[in-house]
Amino acid sequence: MAKADAVQVSSGKKEGFFQKLWRYKTLTLMCVPAILFFFFFSYVPLPGIWVAFVKYNYQKGIFGSKFVGLQNFEFMAQSGKLWNLTRNTILYNIAFIILGNLFAVFMAILLNEIRSKVFKKVSQTMMFLPYFISHVLIGVLVFNFLNYDTGFVNSILVKMGLERWQPYADPTCWPVILIFIYLWQQSGYNSVVYFAAIMGIDGEIIEASRVDGANAFQKIRYIILPSLRPTIVILLLFALGGIVKGNFGLFYNIIGTNPLLYDTTDIIETFVYRASMTDFNFSTASAVGFYQSIIGFVIVMTVNYIVKKIEPDYSLF
Image 1: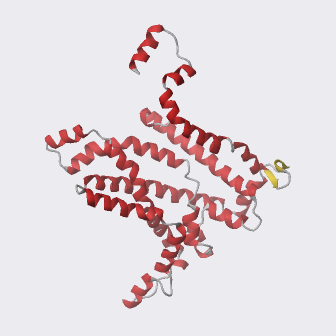
Image 2: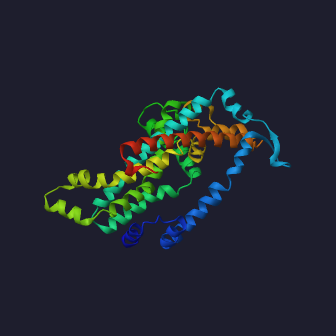
Image 3: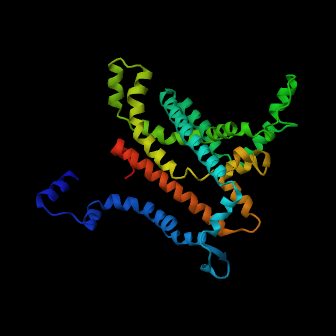
């Protein structure tokens, strides 16, 4: 690669796009599956955004349906819940992103410090298991734990002579419960990327730190964490793109249709589902998706601009 660059500089001619593709044909070929995936599933469906601005008619199709402008966006604003729904969705996702990454980094570092290979593999397996449990089953488990009449928690409280707890009538406790469930389910899986990044750290640097007398905490602070910083920043930037898109499966299967908890647990997806489940209004759903994408795009561009100003090497572009 360096030789080719030297030849290019010496010739004084600027290399064209297709010449670069041919020179890096092996890397280009490896990228083809990802390019095709994003082309067919991200770019080809883009004309479908038009559904958000029409009153969709099944017989006339997307482009034959009546144009209604921003009418499909009005139902959320007219309901008076737009701010509350957006606030809940963003705050939950901020908690999921920040705490989820912190726990994932913490668990990856702990795994790296385990010396027994057998215990390390068993620990990884136990951490991955919650990720493969469906949200439906998690909802059943949560209900069996917190049910007022026969739940595990209330059974313990009764045996201790205390009053029963009514979590399904108390909206203030659910942010903590939902965040805890998310961390329990996702942290083990999310730690894979950070664990792989730790494995990629040059072993000679760690060995040199040991020779210099660095203990485990100093190794983590001065070598591992700085090495993970680029990975953390990039993953945070990617996660911010979906900060307005809630985890429908988690919220709906655990909360269900309990209006007593909507104040602190209702997100955009659950509200749209309840509002459109009777008439299957694709236009409304598309309008909400477009609204979420625009906000996510603005957030990613803003944060990427800030990161580029502070540390250009860590920005997406």
